[in-house]
Length: 633
Ligand code: WT7
Image (cartoon, rainbow, N blue to C red; front, top):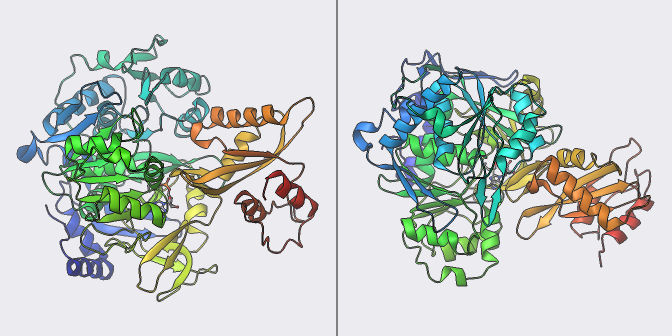
């Protein structure tokens, strides 16, 4: 395979080239893809507006690069292995040829149902091959997909439909997840009561659950594909045409639609996949993420399929029907590269070594981590017991906005260092800045992580609100992309990510804004005000701690706390449900009315020995009450 770095000196060589002659570097990488029309200019950009064009005026279709480009050489190769939730259901292997035909067939069905280039299509589906087919068919016809994690509530789904004015929703009758059978079609029905843009809902029959089909709007997946041709001419897309929108939480307001475009995303998702995981032709690769997150987009679907890889898709959860399920799957398919999140590792570590005993895991060559800082204990457990001490562990730092892995070891090529994402990929220019935005040069420095030069898969805008994109990422430190993370460059020059420096929490690898959870809590009629912070949690990385001022009249604390948790579950989804709710009579506020979150974070972390300067507080007396209420010994 082209474009693969194979040695440490090769890495340094490529990195230098990518910094000194970025356009030459990326044009050489991009040349191995199939473009209907070549670009006029590799890159034009400014970070002020911001405006970023990669492979300007080139024309392509990303699915031609997955299918047509590879079919002669590996049409019969397995593209997707699907492992169902239930161990008694049959697994499915889909070849590139079959995936191509089914994608074409569904592309024709989408067009027959009125989908045109540029239309937005919401995908609210379980982890089944049809979800991949749905994404690829959208890309094939030039529609913009927006996958919404199927665990989100109806109102979270409605917000996303409304924000991008989606014309269609693709969903299922129900989803299997562990022992649960979730009636998702009903969630879609509820969401659509709050939206007006959706014309058609396509329902894939997965669980045979009883559903209401609204006539004129709802159609069965198996009916609309009937009789559709298995050939389809791919739409011609501009390199900067939208490929997808993916919603993610920020420190303020509702989740924003991160926009990724076609050419640059294609080049970078494939390049980073190949190099980080060092994928070889016959390897079996498995990423355990859900397609509702960016990891699922870039490293279950696009990166692997563009590389002609065999990618495993798992419908279920790590602990069902037993806590050895992941290890069982690795042995069953002889998985070579395994990519998961620290929260899953810690949850499985808590079950001890027994679930590992029946499994050899000897096929593993590379193990990976993503989503949150991996603590050293989890790193060592993963490295020693899953990687058996002889698999490189790639700790991959990146974000929804970056589209692909930015800082990570390249497996077996660049050195591993526990809990360090380590070195940037070629083409990536991370810098650490102080609070004024001055670049901190040299080693042993700590500050805010920025990127000072564009890379092909970077965010282009936030859908429908370009100013928000500028304000969020390009205004804090003018001339740079600000990540929202803190980072340290250690004495060896390796980067360690320290976590968010803004009001964004990372709960089980899921990104959640404190303001978003507060807004949900405030919907409860008895709530007067709330403040939410993250705190260290053994399994989840961070837990959600909510301080709430309530009108208590005629109510018990316990029932209110449960109702508040339930309100958040309904408004956002189970992943946002607070772990702790503490009813308080006041919140510590400065004279200008700002909540002093620093103190709330300390109390939630049970670390109250040094609360720092509290002299600007308007109501210092609430601190004692809050500490007492938090049951800190
Ligand atoms: C935030 C982005 C990128 C896919 C999954 C999450 C944190 C992500 C790491 C890592 C330390 C990490 C950061 C980042 N994060 N990977 N290897 N080490 N922190 O995507 O939901 O957009 O969240 O996740 O804080 O900003 P996301």
